[in-house]
Amino acid sequence: MAFAQIVAVVCVAVAVAEAGVIAGYGGYGGYGVAGLGHAGLGYGVAPVAALAPAVAAPHGLAVAAAAPHAAVDYYSYPKYSYNYGVADALTGDVKSQAEHRDGDLVKGQYSLVEPDGTLRVVDYTADAINGFNAVVSKHGHAVHPAPLVGHLGYGHGK
Image (tube, rainbow, N blue to C red; front, side, top):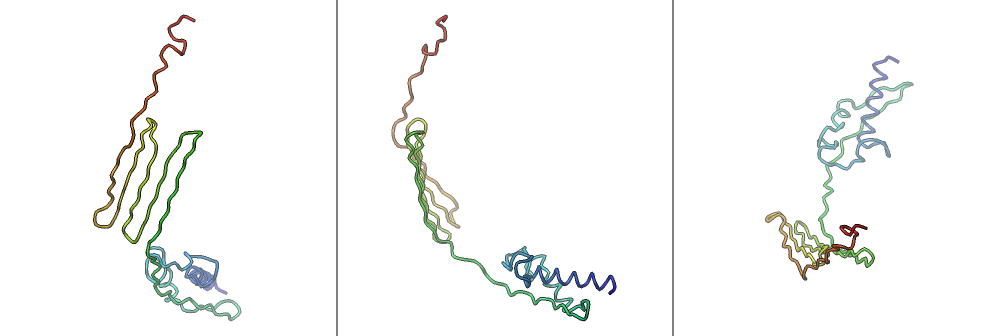
């Protein structure tokens, strides 16, 4: 077999594999994401396969190229809710967050206890029209410990 025929067979085999015809190999698994190949959505190999529908392989075997994948829309409507919280008495770490999304509208709140003892609460919303908006509020009074002047052995000549 001539060197050109071997190269052609290898190129078609790679094109078929990248097109997702050979299971478990190549490409991006047929995800159809723009810019990631397949069905003319990016650099894809489907046009190469269309140019070389069959190439004679050694011993009379024929290697058929794959047909381009049909474009599939994998968009799913974004909808979720979650919340969590931490209240660690040992470290004093106290915080929480809750968020709900329905399409392009996101609403949420998070809070945390600041080092000065106040509670910071942030209520936020985000949508396609108004963007991200947050309202920050503080609750409680700041408590600052008294300084430890004179208790560390400074200035006592000891």
